[in-house]
Length: 357
Length: 251
Image (cartoon, chains in turn purple, red):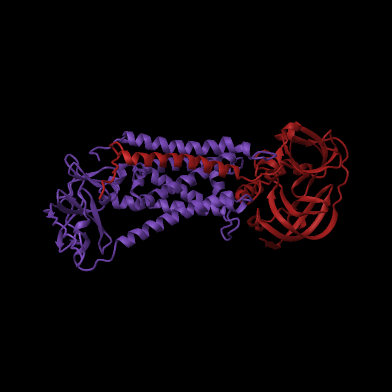
C-alpha cells in the first residue's frame, strides 16, 4: 500500500519470488535449448530458429498453466497464497517469453519473402474454412495481444486509474489468452506430432487448470450455503477465532468478511480495494485487517486504511441471533464506522442424559 | 483452533510456511526443468533434407525447360551431377527464378549454385543474377515429355525448397503458412507420394495443360490428400498435372 507510485515496490519476498520464477524459466529454457539436442538422434538437426521458437513457445504455455493453477490452488489451500503475491511479475515474464517465441516465428517462417513479414503472417494461409490447416497463427496473435495488454496494465497505476473492478475484469483476459493458446497449439504443432509426449503434457497442463478451477468453485459453492431472508447467516458463535474472519456470501454474490477482534465482531467487504484480494482470508495484525495478497490494511470497524493511506472498503451491520451471527446484505458506504458487536460466550455442550463425566 | 501461519508480503514468512514454500519452490523449478526436457526431447525427426554446403558450389550446363516451373536437364555435368539428371531451380529466400529462366526456355544454359538434397529430391538454389544462370554455347537437344497416363495419388503438397532441406522440418500443417508463402514466391511445388510412383517418391506438381499449381490447391497444402491427374516424364523428372476437382482430404 502506498501513497505514491514507483516502478516496483521491492521487498525481500518479491526478490525471492522473482528469483525462483526466473530460475524455473531459465531451467526450462536451458534444458530445452542445450540439453535435449543431445538426446535427439536426428540425422540432421532441427533448425536452430525453429528449435528456439519451440522452446520459448512451450515455456510460455507452461508458465501460463502455472499462473492459472496458482489462483485456485490458493483458494483450496491457503498455504499457496504467497505464490499469488507477486504473480504479476510472472505474468510479465510470460509476455516476454511469448513475444520471443513470436519473434523467432516471424523472423524465420515469414522472413525471406518478397512481401512484408507482418503482411505475410496475415495472408499466407487463409484456409479459415477447415480444421486441418486452419491458420492457427491467428490464435497465437490474439493470445500475444492479450498477454501484452495484461503486462502493460499490470502496474498499480493502472489498477488505480481503471478502478479495481474494471482492472480485475480486464485481467480475466488471461483466460481468453489461455484458451487461445490451447487452440493455437491444438491446431498447430499437435496436428503434426508423431511423438505424443508433448500432447500428453499439454493435456495434463490444461486438465490441471480445469480441474483446479472446478474444485475451487465447488468448494466455494458448498461453503456458501443458501442464506435466505434480509439478514444472511455467517457462522455459529463458537466458530469464530480471535484475529480471523468468517466469510459470508450474500444473495447478491458479494462476499462479507466478519472479523473477531478483541472479543467483538465487525464486518467489512471481502474485496480489498487494491486488487479485490480476499480480505476474509487475511488476519488482524496490529489491530488492522491485513490482506493476504499484498498486505493492504484496514481498520475493521470503519473499513479505512490507516493514515496516510486512503483506501476504503464498505462495512456491514451485524447481529447475533441466538447462536448464529448474521450480517445485513446492504453495504454501508466505504469507510462508514459501525459499532462492533460483542461476541457472546458460546453455550457449553450439555452432557447427554445419563452420561457420566 | 491452532494459530494458522499467515503470510504478509512485506514481512518475513512465518516459520511453518517457510518449509512449505521452500518445497513448493524446489518442485516448481525442477518441474519446469523436467517439462523442458520432456517437451524438447519429444520433437520429431525433421527428415534428411538439407542445404549441401559440404558439396561446394555446383556448376553445370543443360537445357532449360519451363514446366512452367524452371527445370534444367543436364547435358554437361560434373563429379556429382551427371548428364541426364533433371532438377528444379530456385533463388535465395522464398523466391523462384522464373524471371531469369524464362528467356532461356528451350536453350542451353549454365547454372551455378548450392544444392538442396532430400533423398531423390534435388534442387539448386542459384546464385544471384547472371552468375546463377546464363546462356551457354551450343545446340540444345530436344526434351520430349513422355506421357505416363492418368494416376490417382495419395500424399501431401509441399513447397519444394523447404521440403528439400531449406527448413527442418519443412513440411506438415505447422509449416503450411511458410509453404504457401514459398509457393506464392514461385518456388516449385512438390507432391510427396505415400507410395512410390514409377520409382519416385517426389513429383513436381503443376496445374492442367502446363499451368501453375492452381490457387484452389493452396488450401490443401500440407494436408494428406488424394487427387487425380496426368503424369509425364521430363528427362528423369516426373511432373503431375493435378486435377483440383478430384482433391479429397484423407485422414
